[in-house]
Image (cartoon, rainbow, N blue to C red):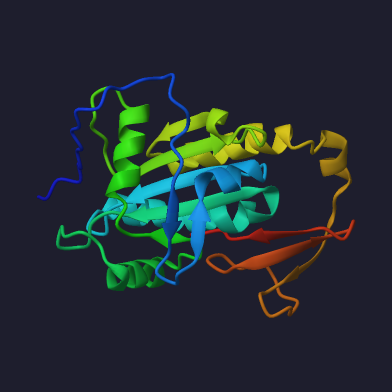
Length: 219
């Protein structure tokens, strides 16, 4: 059985004093994104490193999309980094297109990611090795993005979800009273049509104060 372990060994010295590594990447649609730019906007940033051949990566990608749909209105940004295709070759844009289509991914996804992966491996591991899928969640320092806080490093997307709900939403100033006063008044689909709750379907919840939230529950 093929191993799902991916290891990077480097000669760089691991240090806890270095800043959060910055990067700028272009998606296959030629859209440009920069880590520090997102952090400077006050957004929590989730990085999801994957291999196309890994079943665990596929499962994580599906759950990361659900998280993205649920949290995108809460100043949360998700980025995908696709390392290898299903044949263990370096992923290209055809692979990225297939990956996003198969998993319903709408968050930005990048290829040619070895430089970013290496920088984060050296920053956030002690032995220069990491298993993919690998998730890194950062809480922002908008004034100094390099000093942003690593809130999670691991491969459990459910733990990331809990951290975002238990810590991030609280830190953004949503009080318990405000949450209790909110009432769901309508559910609509992406075309604006009133609908009922449906699993595995992107939905928009409309609340009594006029606010909305995108919801996606996979079953």
